[in-house]
Amino acid sequence: MTENENNLQTEKTDIFDRIMALPFFRLFEKPYKKYKDILLYLFFGVLTTLVNFVVFFLLGENVAGLNVHIANSVAWVAGVAFAYVTNRTWVFKEHAETRDGIIKEVLSFTGGRLFTYGFEEAMLLIFVTWLKFDELIIKVIAAVGVVVLNYIISKVIVFKKGGKEGK
Image 1 (tube, rainbow, N blue to C red):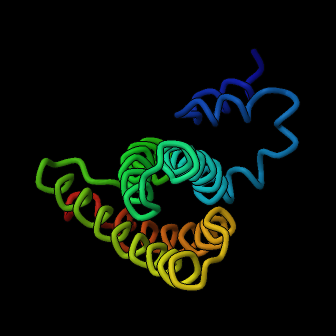
Image 2 (spheres, rainbow, N blue to C red):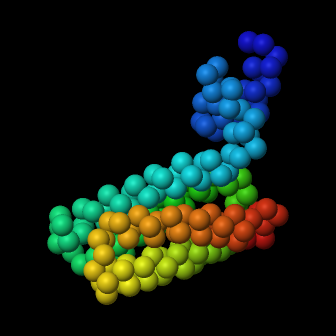
């Protein structure tokens, strides 16, 4: 192993870093390092959205027959749980380490997600329930706004730099 490969391996801390160290992906190493949190957030955001949509679809009026708001609520809970674990584990380097800090972190993460859940529910209420637009089209449009808002909330409030122990 070359010195450069040894340095890359010692610097790498997670599976994504090890993947980026593979020969083909080394071309993208600089932008990956520079924008790692955004890229991983988008990657896991897509997976979180997929979890949300699958649960929403399976429980919705076309499959299980549940009301759109009940299906969306259950999908939201599944998505938030998945998002917290992935964001804390892989996306944001800064996170709480004490019991009290973790409790505060979970509460602020959930609070931020409740805010964006309200945004999404308002979109569904207005455009699906009242205006009778297609539920999946509105769900997709709302998801874009939710992803942007969730990133900002997570970066600025939940997993902020300098708040490691203070959380």
